[in-house]
Image 1 (cartoon, helix red, strand yellow):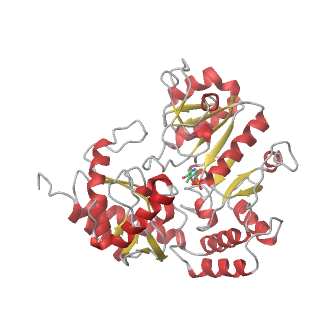
Image 2 (image 1 turned 120 degrees about the vertical axis):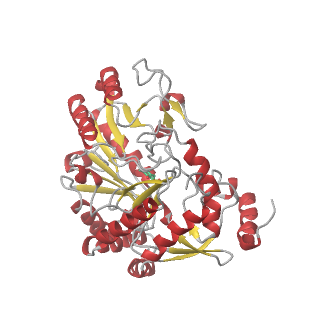
Image 3 (image 1 turned 135 degrees about the horizontal axis):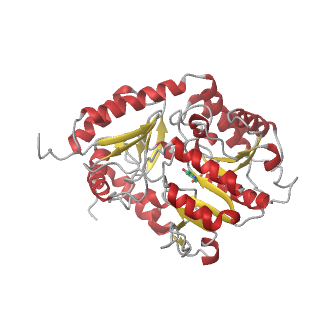
Length: 436
Ligand SMILES: *Cc1c(COP(=O)(O)O)cnc(C)c1O
């Protein structure tokens, strides 16, 4: 590959990374595989911007995939982290900040009484599912295609042929290395499809421990679902005696000080959190009512543990972040910025630029075809066009997540000029429309 002089320090680092690490990355999308070219290496972040190893500045619309709702290196969060770090990086024992963050988290979710901290969203989901199985004495879990719940074995699955029609060919793993028996414990249905849900519950209802979904699916593009459909999921869970788990790892604290379930008026049995709750540090959480949560060890029979769970430095970042979210006018600002980006894209007045948005989560769609509402939709035209836009936007100083399926995240550190700059850069990077 010819070395781009603009990013030669990144290229040199990537060559070293590829020798020391599979694919040069520690999480696969970071390799830029679906947009082409080499990744840039980030050296620092401040506010809405990141700088790469060559000193290039980018306005960041990835924001660490969601956690950085206050922007990079928020002064209050950094100060809290520094003060905590000076008191020791880890105790492996109980401490005050765990209590404070747990109280803050629980206060944000009506009907929920307790929370257990882990170190990632993946772990939160693993724990919630084990808890659901332990509490119900059942085995099966139902998820929805296009929902992402971390990288644990049981959730890296897709529907096998025939499943949703009730013939039950079983689910297939989407990764090598997953035991078929584990994949088969997870059923998969499409979003928004009442008939498919009815079929799954008719065939398996008595064996379903939990239904897990992102109430605002944001990992396969942004696929907002109808409130009535979400209510229908809740009803079917109640009728079958299955627990409903809302995976709010992205949506928790993103749209208001609490969860998306409250906004649509559907209350789950358990909530999983990550991303914002750690303010940029590794934190996940399971939140639920006391009777259910006390099924966890040491009170109950469902085992769960973590050497670095409730880590004091991570807790400090979470507390500082949530306090600012609770006390400030953060959400009005995020909504205004999101609305500005949406309006700017619409004002381009092109049928191949569409957008769906919830607050500060924005998913642009670069195709003339209708935007999908389920993962079964036709994504190819958008994916192909996104691939041609990503590098020019990077060269223009705008860092977008390196996949057409990923949403853009805004933060309170973004400015109107940052938003307008992105819209202008997109306009410049698009081909001249065939019809003016
Ligand atoms: C990011 C994400 C996860 C996984 O969290 P990690 O911290 O990456 O393990 C789980 N569920 C949802 C909805 C997510 O967006």
